[in-house]
Amino acid sequence: MNLVDSKSALKTLKSGLPIIFPTDTLPAIGCLPKFSEIIYEFKKRDRDKPLILMGSEYKQLIDYVHESAKEDYENIASKYWPGALTMVVPASEKQSSILTSNDHTLGLRIPNLYIAQSLMRETGPLLTSSANISGFKGSIAVEGIALDFPSLKILSPIPWEKGSGKASTIIFWQKSGDWRLIRQGEILVRELH
Image 1 (cartoon, one colour):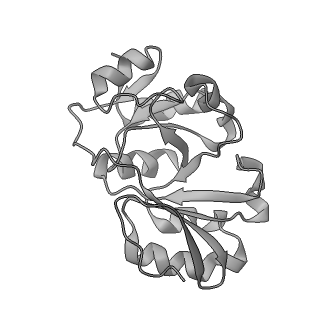
Image 2 (image 1 turned 180 degrees about the horizontal axis):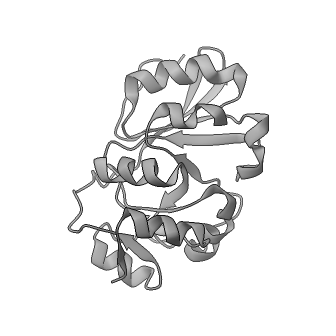
């Protein structure tokens, strides 16, 4: 198993490679935004499926949110983050180079796990997906993930704090004050209209 600490993880990420790290839900594979193509290759993921941008705190992600959605973003973020909620919002024009969706939206999330937040305080926001080969359930145990991705570095220390094993709730911003539920996960969002 290729274990790395946060400092070594940053070197790996800067070299263009992704790393595996725990979150409060499922283990994640993450990379620096400019290297997003690498996750699709490792996961064998359909390129039409967007990635999620994770950060250490909501202020770290606000520049990625289009002006029209910022107020709603801050309202939901202040109530549900850190936590198992992914918000899909229109992306800021100045951040469009990192988009992995075809509709100029970006999924954003702050995991409620100290080791993940600590990593992203060091690295900045990371584009992420669950740490499994697309189409397969995958393991939530470090040992199983290491078998699926033998060449990738895994954030230490292990054992990791156990995540819920459930995917995050996903909500989609439609217009001011109006969110649509895309996937019900662990969190029940009351502000959906």
